[in-house]
Structure formats: C-alpha cells, structure tokens
Image (cartoon, rainbow, N blue to C red; front, side):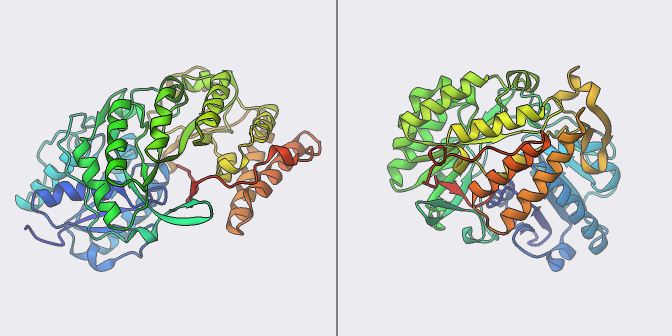
Length: 465
C-alpha cells in the first residue's frame, strides 16, 4: 500500500445520502494500492489533521449546493495546508472549470472522473511531480484545459471505508417505520438534452452503464452495513431499462426483503410502462420523476420531451401499478405567471399529490449554470442578466416582479415550517395562501377528499440541487 494519509477525498453534500462520489473513486484507488482518507462535511466536522497531512485533496462537486460548500472548504484548506494539490471533480467542476482554476483549484476533472482522478494522483504521489502537471485526459489545469472525460471505465466496486455509517444519512420512512437506506448508481450520464439540466453540457447525450457485478457488489456491501432500502441515483434509471431490470431482479433474488427507489423521465415511464409491474414485484416503492411544470409552453422551453397530458398518463399508470410517484418541479421560471403557479398547486391538490411532494419543491427557481443549454435559446434571453460567477449561475429576472417576491416569500416560509416539523399538508396550504394573496384573493378551502391520509414512502432528506 502507498503512503496512507497523503490522499484525502472530501464530500460536502450529496442529497443526504452516503456520498457515492467518494465511495466510487475510493474503490478504484484501493484497487490501485492507495489508502485514501475521506471526509464528509455534511455529517462530520472539519478535520484539520487529515487536511494538514494530505498532499492531494479532491473535492467532489456533483451539484450546485455541493460546489458552493466546496468553495468554502477550499478556502479553509488553503489556510491549513497551502502546498497541497486541490482538485475539484464532478459535473459542476466541469461547468465552472475556468473560475475554479483561477481562484481555488490546481486541477479540475469532469465527466467519468474516476480514472483521470487515479492517474492524476499517481502522477502527484508516486512520481513526485513538481511544477507543471503532465497532460492527462480529462484533467484541466492552469497549463491546459481539457474536455470532460468521456471514456468507458472499468469501475471497481464502491468502497465505503472511512465514511460515517448509514445511520448518519437519510432513512427510508415507510408505514411510519424508519429503515437504513443505501445509495448506488447503475449508470452515468443521460441520453437526453433537457435544457435546464447540468448533465447535457457535460455528457452531450452520452450515457455509460456500470457493470452488473460492480453494482451488485456495492449493494452487498450496503446490505451488510445494515441497508434495508437502496436508492438508485442514476440520472435516469430507464436510460438502459434492460440493464436496470437485470440488476433489480438479481438484487431481489439475493435479498428478497430489500426495497428500492429510482429516478426516471416522464417519457421513459410512459414508454416502459410494461416494466413497472416487474419493478414493483422486485421491491420498488417509489419513483422520482422531474415533472417540472404542467404548462406545455414551459415544458417545450425546457425541452423536457413530455406534455401535460403525458403527466396525466403517468399518474394513471402509477395508480394502477401501485407504486408511489414523487414528482419534482421547477415552479419558478421566467415564463411562469401567477396563474400558472396557482394552476400547478391546484393540480397537485386535485391529483392527491400533496403527501408525495417534498415542500421544498414549491420553492425551486430555475438555475442557469455556466454552459447551460438554455443560454442558446432565444426564449430566455430577454430575462437574462450577467453571469454571477461567484454563485455559479446566470442572473435572471421575472417580467412580473411579484413572482420574484413570491418565490422569496415561499422559500422563507417553507424553510421555517420544515424546521419546525410542520406537516406537509399545512405547508402546502400556507403556500397556496401566499400564491392567492398575490392576486388579492383568499385561497379556496382545501377539500378533505383531495388529500390522502396515508403518508407514502419517502426518504427523510428533502430533494434540492
């Protein structure tokens, strides 16, 4: 084994689950003979000793929130260990590569990051590189910019060595019982080009499967650690439906009591509806799907590939198959009117979806990161301001100032009510009141028959990017 303690991989936030962007590269590094340290700042304190002894520190940034937190961490790391090599890796590293290299990073890796990360570490640790880095595919540095790495990898099974136990992370809640939940990925990237998604600018329609044996080895490790539920965190679990079905069938054969959830597009749920009974029988409890809007014009602007009617179709399918659907939304866009927002809330109520939706979803404002496909579209240009690089997004203003004020008000209210453990239905009712007040109206009284009394299965961490 090579120099234990000289490598440190840091996660700041991965939606409340055990960080896969740490466990996946750790598996590859351990296979190569390294013994990396790990640090998850979402559940553990800043560890000065680990930082002080590290020659290489990799900061995982798979999402916007993680990047903002990682930049804060990088500033502290530089103060504690000025000579260490800092590498940002992940989707949001690619999108913000130039800025990160200018201010915080020695290197940046995007796309299929594990292999470039390993080669970079080997160059720095084994070969004692000083000065300019060697040119490595996928590794951008002060000397040379590289595109995201888009080669198929020979993944190692994820290693959760050194990470906090599953009890520190989001749990499954089902029928009032809390169960430990693990997280795994069966594929990377996405076939589609939704304009608001951060994945297409990096993967450009590419998608890579992880071998079934690697995924199942990871699941076995998680089950041995106490997991009773598995979240498949693929950007879209049905990009490769046959691959996914084989994995969950094999998991069910080996662990019949293990349940799971996954994420998939509306259009895939429609096209692959015949697979849903098999997925249910293999243990699927719920599916997360990015509905985003019920307005066809907005869905077209986002290039979502589905319509309002398609959403109705999917809801009907899920009622018949008895799997919970958990929609996510982008309710605040430059094109969303107050009538649209209220229409969305009434749709949620009429379709008895209030218990299925994390209240933070009512607050989400369209994020336009650098390199976003939205920047190519004429529809958004009248509303765009400058790039706020320090916050990693383009500014935009709604043509109706009331909508920006409503979004801020809803966000503050929802955050406060979540912290006080207010029931979802009460939060929803308060959001409706705020929305109707913009029109100078009182919200109609909620009808009891529009609200389900049964809490559907969910994870304890609210989703946001």
